Image (cartoon, rainbow, N blue to C red; front, top):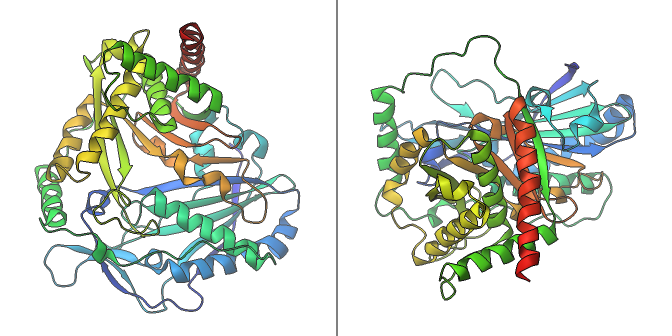
Length: 459
């Protein structure tokens, strides 16, 4: 593996200094308390030397990060146990004294290969993503870190890690796009900066005490101890590789027509089925992963998050900084998923589950945590990211990124990432063992060909 050399470790605070203070965790935040960071890396062509980078681009990146942290000041701080000793947790940022780490690095790895969509060793991408500092002795932990890596005469990679307890993908992309806009301004541009984050957590009502109840359930689970880990496999562990697969706009539209035809054929022509680009991309990835995994269980499960800001009553601002997600659960018969109409069947089931949320997005919230735990043995497919967040619009003055990777999907087996494709459509990111990636790619291509041919026949 090519070496990545750390050139500097900078501590970047807010400028002007942030006000600081404590903020509560909401019931949307608490389930993510003991998870980990969301980690992305953005690749940009950059045909300059490391010295040119240090003299010209790096100062703008640092000053713009400082300006961005002034607005997003909770990310400067930590999550800590509440000082009242009641067993809760809170976000805390001291007045003006906090900073995030910005790692500056240089890599001799192959930028063109890393920023392409083909299979790559996940470990090579993790060299471009910062690790969050270790937790403190008091149980507190930092929330954010960044890394900028220059590939001399080839490109620049910007890696950002933000702990999921601090925010969801909507807030994550709001932060990174604000930093990028501030960088364009610092470099002499006159670009508009996105609106500041909305920090009032009082807009998330919790009349039933879900935050405290969920935390109690998590403590009970920890007290009973985790399940024993599976026995280690003999010999060296298989290498995990990451790759991306594109769904063009015409293929998405063809898949939607196929789903509509199946719903009508099944007698659901009068029912309402939500059928978006997200729906059909999830369905295709789910069917392909099921084929790669062998489909040994009688039921197949899918778990994904639905953004709730506009679904709450009353709705809360889209700029709200924090988590505002609910889980959505879908299941179909494995035989149906693996059948010739499996993608359409999966898409219809996903669409129906999303449409059902219109009856009450918080219905059953008290049981979400236990439902998620009950699904773990079933090895559900889960989804990170969404095409709606516009990660390919993140421009630090270098143009649109050549590639964006949600690297942290490797932490949970069976997780795929979704993003808008750079050139329209949807991009599906997958991490599997090296031997399985070719099978997934073949399944993905075959499914598209079969489904789109069937739509042609229907027309």
